[in-house]
Amino acid sequence: MRVLLAGGAGYVGTHTAISLLEAGHEPVMLDDLSNTSSVVIDRIAEITGARVPLVVGDAADDEVVEGAFDAHGPFDAIVHFAAYKAVGESVAQPLSYYANNLDTTYALLRVGLVRGIRSFVFSSTGTVYSDPADLPFTEEATRNLVALSNPYSKSKLMNEQVLTDVQAAHPELNVTLLRYFNPVGAHASGLVGEDPKGTPNNLMPFVARVAVGALDEVGIFGDDYDTPDGTGQRDYIHVVDLAEGHVKALENAAPGTTAYNLGTGNPVSVRELVASFERAVGRELPKSVKPRRAGDLAATYCTPAKAEAELGWRATRTIDDMTRDVWNWQQKNPGGYEG
Ligand code: UD1
Image (cartoon, rainbow, N blue to C red; front, side, top):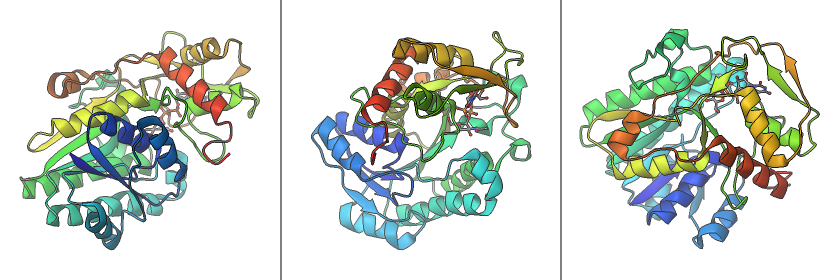
């Protein structure tokens, strides 16, 4: 299968390109490199022996997308990773989040439909669910746009609606919505991984920076939640498991619009994640309890049973695999790709 990965040079896209190559497919990347580096192409070549073609440009621009089809098409499928994803920033800059995260979808659909793609796979998020009464979240759990706390999550749910409506009008197109839980980890080689710009907001990259000495201590945002150890629980998923989920979704794309949760189904607390990282590093890390972070739920985790039943996919990597691989990546790339 020949697959256009829009936003493909980012964290999840890079790992997906590797998994696609390993499964015998042909990925091509379209990326504006606003939040990543073209170094990923060299790293993927080191791992797989294959150089993935990269078109540098904006996936919201029809002419750029057409150029990618002209140069490297025809494509069987598009996977759409291209989005802004910082929750706090989305509250401060809603217009740019809605514009970018929706305009990319419009352009990719407009061009993809004319050029005859058969399937469209969309990077959605487990944060489309927000009602703790629904835990563990199935794909049918409540998705209530007005209940979502930030424009990032809303833009993802709005995209899901756009895709559902477009698919209904174009039954020849298969649409798959992949709702990611908390992607963490890195390729076992340590050659590719997550490279956030500036101080990370998310827990795993923050802990990694503390471990490498670039930040002073881990702040635990609240230890008085109604959870087993009082700290927040999340469904962390190894990015390589997540990447393999994309391959299975492409290989098993079904008529209509279908949503899948991609998570492990195992809630892991902040303290458990930090303890796992400490095992990987072989020493304790400085940490202290801080106030709760506004907008956080006590716990979010899914049931991934539908993806197992329909796609034959299941996450196999443990939290210790995730922290070990992040530590390996962090040590080999203390300044990220361009450090
Ligand atoms: C965040 C995003 C979510 C996105 C996901 C991707 C928010 C509100 N949500 O989810 O939209 O899809 O990342 O992985 O940002 N924590 C600490 N100390 C820290 C950082 C985090 O204790 O320095 C805690 C949080 O309170 C939470 C857990 O760690 O309980 C995970 O936080 P984080 O990694 O930011 O992910 P989410 O908030 O789940």
